[in-house]
Image 1 (cartoon, rainbow, N blue to C red):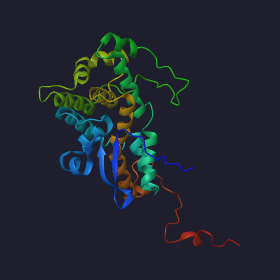
Image 2: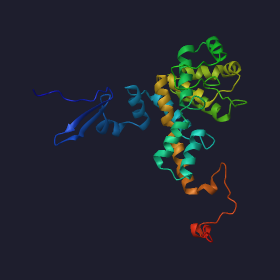
Image 3: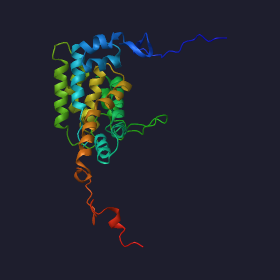
Image 4: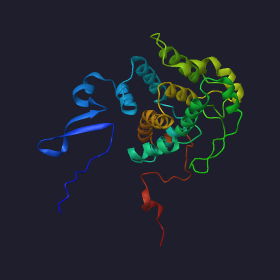
Amino acid sequence: MSDNRTESIRTRIWQEEAEPDNAFAALSCHCHGYDVYGDLLVHASWIEYLFLLFCGEAPSREQARLLEGLAIALANPGPRDAAVHAAMCGGVGGSTSASCLMAALAVGAGASGGAREVRLAMEDWLACGTDLASWQKSLATNPVADPADVWPAPGHPPGFDPYGVRCTTPVLQTLAYLVERSYGAGLGCGQSLAWLQANRLSLESAAGLPLAIHGVAAAVLHDLGFSPAQGEMLHLLLRLPGAAVHALEQKDYGYKNFPFFRVDLENDPGPSQGILARTEGVA
């Protein structure tokens, strides 16, 4: 008996039509109903396409501006960031490009300064909204580990800097700019952001810690309508450009110019002597 069933890929995101003479190549590609190469390629920006991919609908002008601002703020956390540092170690050690990015993703995934922290902070936004009393109660409660989760409980309230003395200038600048950008057209798509700016000192007092960039990112992503899981994924994605360029730079510099944990070898035979000189006189 013949089987006439056809295999299909189940997805709400993507639809393809095959070329008439090549079943393995696409004639047309549609993302959430939009023609990717006939429409989006011509009219959409990268940020607008990114929003469409995650949310299933095109962003408003204000939403696109807000996500673009966050993308710039997160693009390069700098060499002090542990995820960027991991990529730099891969680059200076001669690892492949993919290995450097995977190192950055692995280190930047956790609940202390990583994407999981953003997810937890977004869950707090869902639970507390703009109720200051709820936030103060939540921030005063020690996080409890979920036995079904692979992640240990964070040692500090998500979205706040466990090592900070005061809110840093870049965090304040980012928060102020994104609040202004979300309300620039008078329509407003940053209600949580504006509330965060107005109540920052009270929240910091309740947490006993200053606000971190992860807390700002969580508020932005919440205002844009992303789920905590989507916010976690976006945070991983948006921080990769800095990890990539710093890894490439360190690969060019070499280990002797690595800015952290410099190694100076005693009795270094140097490249001109090689292994033959080191084994000279050995019977």
